[in-house]
Amino acid sequence: MFEAAARGCGLDLRGGGWAIGDSPVLDVEGGRAAGLATLWVSRGKEWPTELAPPDRTVADVVAAVEVLLNEDAGR
Image 1 (cartoon, helix red, strand yellow):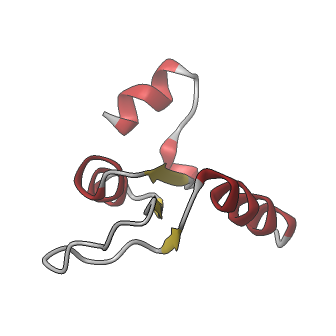
Image 2 (image 1 turned 60 degrees about the vertical axis):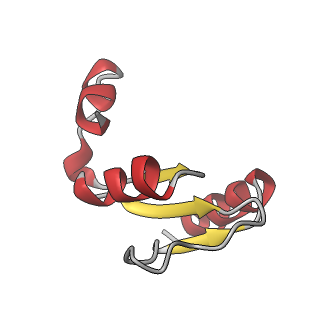
């Protein structure tokens, strides 16, 4: 799914990137399987203990944007 979406936008995931979302399975596990860094927007929920944790966890979308801006500034 991630590869198809990237191709549709003219992008290549081999250069890396982020998978961001609120679904531990669809967003985080899917992103990890595609080789992306993962950022989970928890929205007050607990991470499922049976899954490997995401690279980053934030409470809301505003915090997710802050992470991305800070990560980009560090490059």
